[in-house]
Image 1 (cartoon, one colour):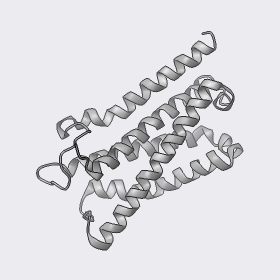
Image 2 (image 1 turned 90 degrees about the horizontal axis):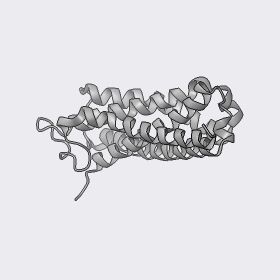
Image 3 (image 1 turned 60 degrees about the vertical axis):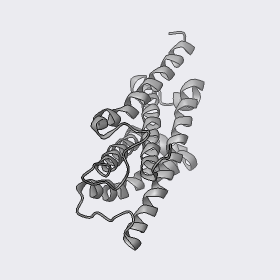
Image 4 (image 1 turned 135 degrees about the vertical axis):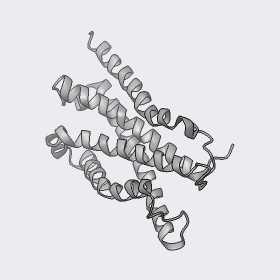
Amino acid sequence: MPIDFAEFTTIITFLGCMCAVVQMSTGYYAAYMLAKPALLTTDKVLSRAHRSFGDFATVLFLLGLFNGINSLVSAVRIGEPPLELGSLSFNIHTWISIPLVVIFAWKAWLSYFDKPKLYKKRRWLGPAMFGVWAFTWITAAISYYLRTLPSNPQHPPPSFLLPYSLMAVQLTLPFVFGGLIGWRILENYKKSQGE
């Protein structure tokens, strides 16, 4: 079954948001519930999960960003995909995403190259990155679905994502799946601590 490029990109965003939910659940648990953010680097279960899902989210964000930049340049240069400046969903997703890339770049730089500064900013930078992912997923999915409607058929109906009639369910799935994975990781952590 062939997959449309726009659906593929939306699936990448889905997976990135799911990874961000897992990372947020481990980070929130260690830093806020236990008030021991050092566990994210010292505990085998929490640090491995937090780091792994953060790495996946970073790669997926870069893939989506690469596609978004290419699509925007192509829209400006040749009109394919269409540059829909009159579309609210296009404008919200596209233009608000630009400053969000700065948050992503800052967080990624600190994560990989300057950990001490990251730990000083952990109180807001981790949740801010989760907000970037949530915004990116929700606006990308809505924008995608609005372009699959019969009244605006820029993309074929989804092959792998849920159909438009179930868009609200689709929007919640990365949060549900990520939450379940995060819950399982936290259960493993508790078990490793003998709780």
